[in-house]
Length: 62
Image (tube, rainbow, N blue to C red):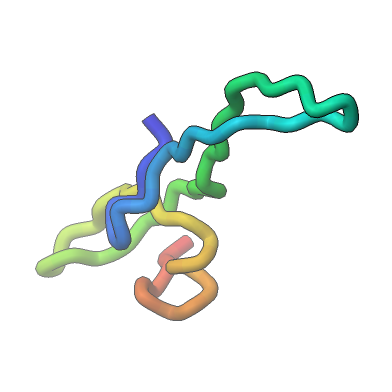
């Protein structure tokens, strides 16, 4: 499941509207990347959205 472990951002649902105004369901997925971080001295793999990575909420370790 695409969900950010830091901010909790997850799948959003909405309605796509075409030029002729026909409506159909759609979904927006967050841009989630896997990152390795150190938590309490242990190396851990978490899912983080690119907004959290870019804002500096975590320090990425290669």
